[in-house]
Length: 164
Image 1 (tube, helix red, strand yellow):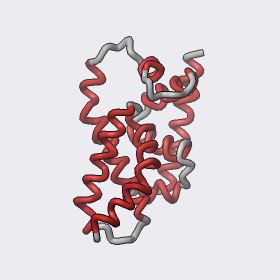
Image 2: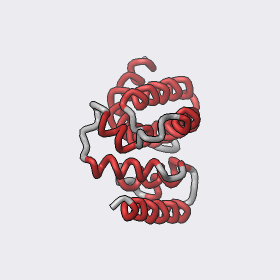
Image 3: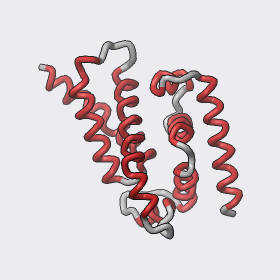
Image 4: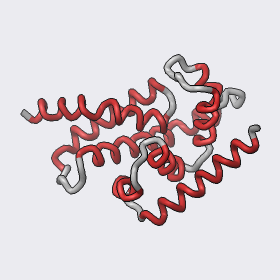
């Protein structure tokens, strides 16, 4: 019975979680790996879910943490990789990326942000989440989130200004 219910959760939340993860890790294969890890972690921790938050919020929190952990684990690999392969160039070469060059450049600007600012920006800008929802996911105050978002927007603006 539990397994059937969890399968339904996986079906319902796979696509939105995939896109949430994809915006953080950028690469299709990596996003699939992180999504799988998210559901494994959720399955092993399902008994700890107390119902204080919505199941979607709980899964988002796990997905975001898994995405950030993935980025931290792979940071050394990225920093030692060929510097000529920018995020924008990498995205434009990715067969799963269907965006424009401007969208790729936006992702490159976002990639330059510190983890918290990047996550807040992505949740607010792409997911259109309210600060109260983000606060619940990241366990921080709405005021801190608003400040992080504002700083992130300024940095992205400066990035585009420098690349024009």
